[in-house]
Image (cartoon, rainbow, N blue to C red; front, side, top):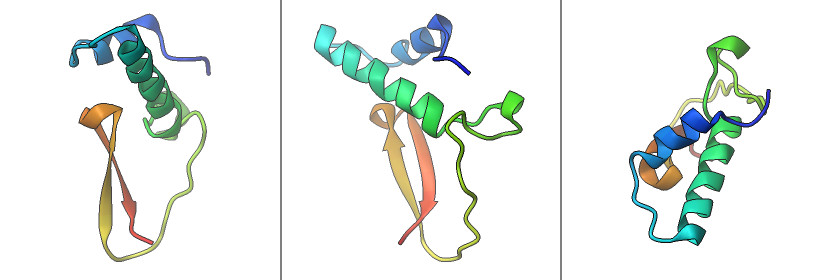
Length: 78
């Protein structure tokens, strides 16, 4: 699977105001990372393009903010 379409990058940009070109590039880079590493895809049977292992652990769940807090990923604490 390739990188996200222009539409999905534009959707991410709809929720933030980039202060300058460098800031916009950082936001888009974070979104592409989120898209490949954390966002699930129905076409991939709810997996990520990069793949991810399911955890069978119990305990405390921690929240990791992604793309400046627009998205979140939840994992088990170590």
